[in-house]
Amino acid sequence: MTIRTIVVDDEPPSRANVTALLRRHDEIELVAECGSGADALEAIGRLRPDLLFLDVEMPELGGFDVLEMIGADAPAAIVFVTAYDKYALAAFDAGALDYLLKPFDDARFERALLRAKERILSSHAPTLGRTIAIKSVGGVAFVKIEEIDWIEAADYYSCLHVGGATHLLRRSMADLEKDLRPYSFERIHRSTIVNLDRVSKLDVAENGELEVILKDKTAHRLSRSNRRALLAKLQGRDAIQ
Image 1 (cartoon, rainbow, N blue to C red):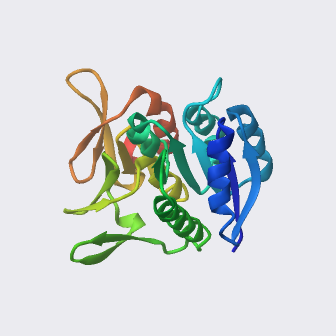
Image 2: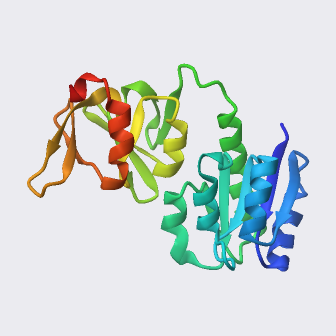
């Protein structure tokens, strides 16, 4: 398949380095090179790339600003490219697949590109009856999406709670949230996603904050910024009748 790719970096030498490495791959179609966040916004909206290499620090609009403004139109795979390691955690939380720290060698770039190709291929796969494959030392576990009770953030990972079991998945919450959109899931906090079919009720905690109580009796904080969206999704369900 052809992978439509955009490279965004305000430094021409850095941008040229990434594009030179990409041109080694016949399946990569370089549809745009952008030197600013504003140019990136226009190009992403017009060209709908599959893959985005994105600098973090740029004048006026940085990489995080770009991702926030494109929202649900974000490409299937996003790789941050930056000279600063301090943004790594925020990048994964924003949905980045990988984080290339300048200067990087060819081998490190190829690993990032391979991961991006795998992500893009999986994003084009049929979604009916989907399961999540979770690799571990003992093998691979296959979890049906509808059987997940709730998900919590764990640094660069996401922890899936399924019945009495937990599974650690190397994917960010923001990234996983995109894949769960066709299903009955909602983010209720920066660090928590719940299966709406598992919601039992909403309670007021001792500190006055709202909590989401699941059928497994676990309680999860509902942030103020996520209240409206959750209540809209729950309206008409038994959980709030």
